[in-house]
Amino acid sequence: MRLQNKYALIPGASRPIGRAVARKFAKEGAFLFLPYYDWPDSTREMEEEFTSAGYSFFSCQVDLRNIKEVKKLVSEIKKRTATLDFLINNIERGGMPVVHGSYDRPHNSNQWDTEVDTTLKAKWLLYHHCLPLLQHSSCGSVLNISSIAAITGRSGPGGLFFNDGYSAANHAIGSLTKTWARELSPRGRVNELMLGLVESRHGPGTRGWQVLTEEEQNNLREHILLNRFGTPEEVAELAFFLAVEATYLTGTIIPMDGGFSLGGDSIQPMPEGVLS
Image 1 (cartoon, rainbow, N blue to C red):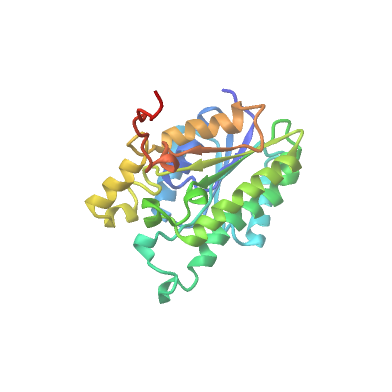
Image 2: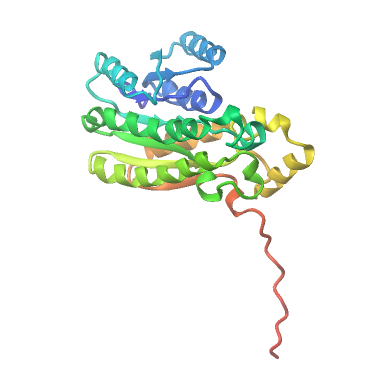
């Protein structure tokens, strides 16, 4: 196992994408730190699965938007290791317009702050307070998980899923990725995986998908060049490659969207021209 005696911090592992990523690291022998916040049923499933599989992990409830709770989490990590080898910054919260509606609606009075604080601020808090541990690793690696909402914003068919605050927060992650790559060099690396529509995340298996009309679902699928949605397992494979195996890659943002951000424009037949 390649990651024996290595330590990985992976928030969001109670949900399908984070779970797939954590499973991949655990199978390679890493000890996992798995903070969670809500989704109690999913968290219980994760803990039962990982315990049954014999994975080494520590899980605890943490509000990663709260500096005191993040510091407490880092203290728990320090009780077990003097280094942190991998930070998979997989934390976000986006209010889908198709579900939540406008920010103007009373139930959305805090939605903008929730999207920005969870998607952006929490990533910064985790990185900032884990930085000394990452710097003590011989292979410290950070992978920020973001969304192609950073590119598209609330436009096109993806506007059903991507709200303004969420899109802006994801766009800002790119700045952090490049800054942190400079800060962690030369001993460590920082990269970003920008996800498109994935099953269980802005795709089938989400609450937003269930409320779309058949036409809206087809429009989203057809906007993807590969004409299908990604899977958590595909995300986990690329996340592992970027965090562990791509040892000469840093400060790089990799879109993994099946061609969604290129969709909507077809290639036209070559015209005959007017010259003879």
